[in-house]
Amino acid sequence: MFRKILAGVFCTTLVFSAFASCSGKAGVSSSESTTDTTSASATETTTEALTAENVDIANFTAPQKGDTIITMKIKDYGEVKFRLFPEYADKGVENFVELAKKGYYDGLKFHRVIRDFMIQGGDPEGTGMGGESVWGGKFDGGTDPHLIHVPGALAYANSGSTSTDGSQFYVVTGSAITDDDLDYFSQGGYVFSDKAKAVYKKVGGTPWLDGSYTVFGQVIDGLDVIFKVQYVAVNAASSMPLEDVIIESVTVGEYNGEEIRWYIDDYKDFDIEEAKKASEKENVTIANYTAPKEGEKIVSMKLKGYDGEIKIKLFPEYAEKGVPSFLEHAEKGYYDGLTFHRVIKDFMIQGGDPKGDGTGGESIYEKGFDDGTNSHLIHAAGAVAYANSGSTASSGSQFYIVTGDVYNTEEISNLEEQGYDFTDNEAEVYSTNGGTPWLDGSYTIFGQVFDGLDIVFDVQNVETDTNDKPVKDVTIEYVKVSEYKGETVRFNISDYDKIKANTQTATEASTETTAETTTNE
Image (cartoon, rainbow, N blue to C red; front, top):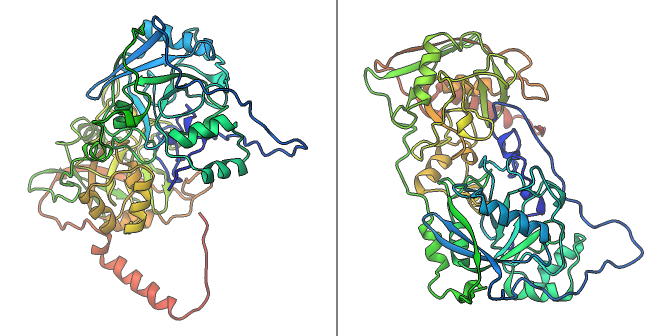
């Protein structure tokens, strides 16, 4: 099914790091900031039919010998060459060429990759929030009808208009386009010339981006490399590759008559299915539910007003910086008296901020720490992880404990259609124990609740205000460190008799009434 991803996906503000998400799921942030972007559609009432200038499409016009071209080397993938169009995008070409000459792009990564759409890079921060033009700040690269969003098109990302072009760019991969697709776009207010329609039906692309982004180049060789990159495994919410895709270098040269391969069909040795398979994640063992060993350090957390303790197994082998930071904080009483300042049912409970509002906290390290992520640990129910403000490099003292949902086969398939790749082991955990899979790859998991998960699930049901802050404080009485001495291990919520009893009571009650209730969160 054709995937209609509207232009707002290129907003260079880090929407996914806050408590919002492109997929409608929540993210976990230690500094609150949300930005909403809206793409205007051409649906204004008019007495005249909208038309598009029916000019020749220049994307597949071969460069002349001596013309400036760009060569981009992508680590572990290969080399890509671009033809530039200064006659249609003079400022855009000048900006990219001058940045490349300065080595600006060397070592940066593709921070957003969406299959059948595009790959995006050029941000020194690697988050989608950074970058600037060669002149400093932003510039207006404009648009030109001669250049459209066919596979291989090179264009600037922006945050609402071409006047916010900077250093971030994307390369289109796109999808097949039919007459039905073009009709669908027309109903939404998009207008295409006959010549643009003919090209899109022949080669595909992302036509709904035309007129909103500055196209300034086209791949003349290495389109297979771009297509291979688009199949990397990514985080479902952010579309950030789980393993970095690094731009080794971007250099400026001249065209000397080399062979040109515009279309993916020109690459006879390129196998799409093979590329997809090569990008699949390794099906590693999921370690979340590994029981602690005798004498192993564990953490016990007591909440005021709740019976029992939340006991947490730690994973120093997978979070070598995150675990020591949490342990030292606990031993010093850092968390004692703090609150869970954000609670979202069927998602998580978040605490560890001395300010109590999601903007404070720090690690034990002077300059912070980045423990990254590890594929052996996933966001299963009971997982304990660090909140951050856009990347694992911003982890501090704030943490959250996952509650989540159990996912059936159809729901897992829906996430896969959004770009998420489940291994067999991950799918089994999420369909059995539940969790929040869209967070995988973006947050450092360092622990797992092995007893007291019923307390966590009780907390997620407290009354909250419009900012997800509990109306009545949920206070951490203490967090202490001890050694595991063979205590009962209850990883799954179904292991708790109280939960079973409540579930049975609720089921019996439901058979005694025909009233229906609906709760909107």
